[in-house]
Amino acid sequence: MAPTPKLCPSFFPFLILLSLFLLFLYSSLLPFATNKVSTSSSSPPTKIIASSSSCNLFKGQWILDPSKPKPFYDESCPFHRNAWNCLRNKRDNMGVINSWRWVPKDCDLERIDPWRFLGLMRNRNVGFVGDSLNENFLVSFLCILRVADAGAKKWKKKGAWKGVYFPKYNVTVAYHRAVLLAKYQWQPKQSVSADQNGLKGINRVDVDVPADEWVSIADFYDILIFNTGHWWGYDKFPKETPLIFYRGGKPISPPLGISDGLKVVLESMVQYIQKAVPSNTLKFWRLQSPRHFYGGDWNQNGSCLFDKPLEAAELDSWFDPSNNGVNKEARQLNKMITEALEGTDIQLLDLTHLSEFRADAHPAIWLGKKDAVSIWGQDCMHWCLPGVPDTWVDILAQLIHKSLETG
Image 1: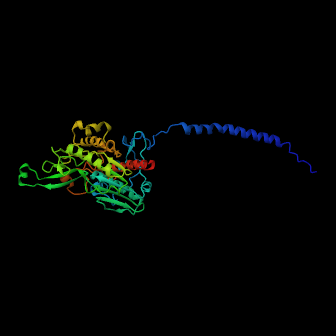
Image 2: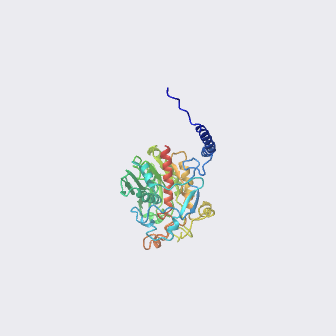
Image 3: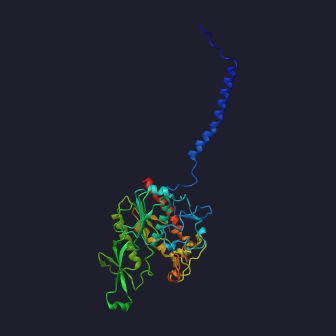
């Protein structure tokens, strides 16, 4: 029989020392592991995430941030509109204008990722319907998205005023010009006697009929952004060429003034949208883009030659209707629109407050055409591009992501 092997006597002390060392190492590291788990599971985040129901992207402040990334596009974007191309028109201070960053009060605003956004939107279409401020919005959107698809090309079908097709993702983004949303048409004077009252004719508005430019698009777009408001004023429709409102093909009696006419049109158009646009279409209504005329209206030598945003304490003096200033209509119209949308699935895109600060970011006198200011006055209504509408795009993209990803 082979002898039983014997362990070396020096092995036992080594084994005991090794066991003690491992036990010490385990007991030393255990508190760190326990603390790490406890911290990650119980400590609240420092910011409310954007998808939180308590997040309000529309309230906050502008911070001057020299480290803010440069805009996605410049004056060479092929979808620009000349009067808003402030880089090409050599507008002063463009670098500073685009160094202000919107910081919501209780959450983060993410910069749009054009590649991720178009990937999310693959085989979907986005439509803007309204006046030139929605076109201003659209141009920013198109120029940003183009960086993710160099093959983007102009598109103009289904009554679109302007649009772009992104072939890499099979996405169309377009704008339908319908300044009153309802159908309206010019009707010249019918008799010589009309001259006695200075009446040149009327603009007939059928309050219950959507404008032809967007009436047939309901099934094409997966996301729609509406607006109206800037044309609802006596500067656009003076007493010589007034708005006359019709319902069911007949004049409304007694006749409505512009404000009451807008209220009826809003009610009718909202009802039409709710009825004609599929329920799974994501719908937004952009509230007013504020004007910044100072010292008079657009045709009264109004100006907006400012080099920095307004302070929060200045906003009411500029925009509160009780002050009866030239820029008061934005908040007045917002109230009417908000009331008309109550109880619907149309989301408010309230870009008014954040835009009220930015008196510094309009084309002003840099309009790209000789004598434009002497003919039309300064542009203190539309926005330089790149500029404030790029922030609108960031907000819209974040809301779309939230809506589509959460269902």
